[in-house]
Amino acid sequence: MTNTIRVALAGLGFGAEFIPIYQAHPDAELVAVCQRSEGALTTTADRFDIPGRYTSFDAMLANPDIDAVHINTPIPDHAAQSIAALRAGKHVACTVPMATTVEECRAIVRAAQESGRNYMMMETVVYSREFLYAKQLVEEGTIGRIQFMRGAHHQEMAGWPGYWEGLPPMHYATHAVSPILALTGTLVDSVVCQGSGRISPELTAKYGSPFAVESALLTLRDSPVAAEVARSLFETAREYVESFTVFGEKATFEWEQTQGSGHVLHVGEDPRPVEIPDFAHLLPAEIAPFTTHGVYDAETNQHLSFTQGAGHGGSHPHLAHEFLRSIVEERPSAIDAPTAANWTSVGICAHESAMADGARVQLPDFAKVPA
Image 1 (cartoon, rainbow, N blue to C red):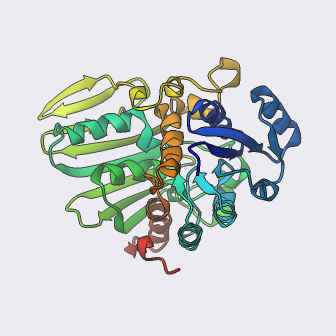
Image 2: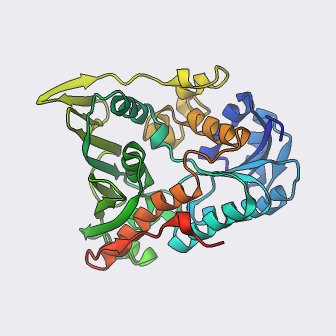
């Protein structure tokens, strides 16, 4: 394989953020885009001068000149499209979550194994500048031994596309789960979860999930550290926040709890405000500027990834870079299929626990998925 990866991008809402990144990346050539609406597809493809244009995902997969597909379509499509792309011999990057059932997660792991192609779940939080800063604190010893982890993601989803309505909170939990597991370097073994509060009958009817908030305790594999995760999606008054806290022996890093209040490093009993640096220096110069600006920067055309979450913390170019380099270097991606399956299944199994009055649910070992 040459070092130039020919990439196709499916889904051009949030997905359009990645167009200029792939076009500028020294290892990539963006050869095609896919969107169901032909008018919107043409507008975006014309704007960025992209030659390949598809309204059919399957037709795009039939193109032998495409090496890799980056999927940014609605959640219900992720599993089937990932499996189809892998079976078509394409490397796959997919936005979160990986799938909506444990069985789908298994099927994607199996498809990746059988195809020999790379899979990467494009989880933004673990490439945000806040996470990279906390990772640095852990690696340099500032935190000391990690003693406890907490993740949270609270977001009001009213008015979003219909498939979101009534979604169980933990079915979209990777933003809260991923920093816990990436910083501790382990996976979740089992989960216990409680549901709290009630949403409207109209929302409950969509998925059969009544809870306004779900809160889970995670048992980490081969680790003395425990963790908790809280999620809400509807009818809970709270400013948007994706956050994690690392409780350490020497210091504790706490993500700001309201926008603009500032991140805090507790050293002993002394809380200190900290400025989070950008980590563009970790990237090729061609894509480094995209940690601070993107397609939707203009006030008249801001995507929610910017208005709610500050552009996913500068993560987009880091994600694309890791995906491409894993292909070029012929190694698993940082968030490969077994890892993504565990991170995603934490939330799926947590909701199962909540629906069973807090019964403990064991996660599968996705590294041992049979061929």
